[in-house]
Image 1 (tube, rainbow, N blue to C red):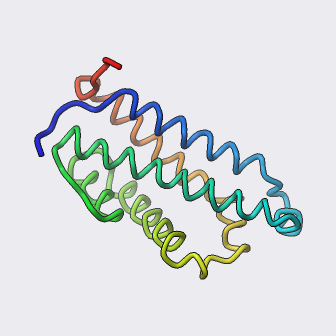
Image 2: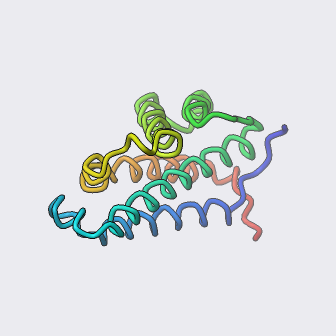
Length: 152
């Protein structure tokens, strides 16, 4: 795989999807666990939106690695370590993304272990982690405009 340029549309689409999913989660009744869990649709919407938000972050990370650096990855946690090696993320940001990868894997493969209470707490208190990674990606993209294919 040879490096090339990142696709502006892919970047925009993944970031817009992340923003949409975070907004959907924030629109849920998160003031109390009782209110959140009183309607099962809230729980299922939160799970779906959180999983999709995580997927958008990892899709963008994979795109940066593949197109920008010619690096192919197969594991979600590997995305974080390779982005750190490539200088896209700091060590702390890569550690955070590794944690998010672990949570994504739990949601997909050990979904039966993720409790409603845990999902509520993450949606209420931890969405900022997604936005920190988004900010790191945007900072790198803005610092490397020559890496972006501006054509649509």
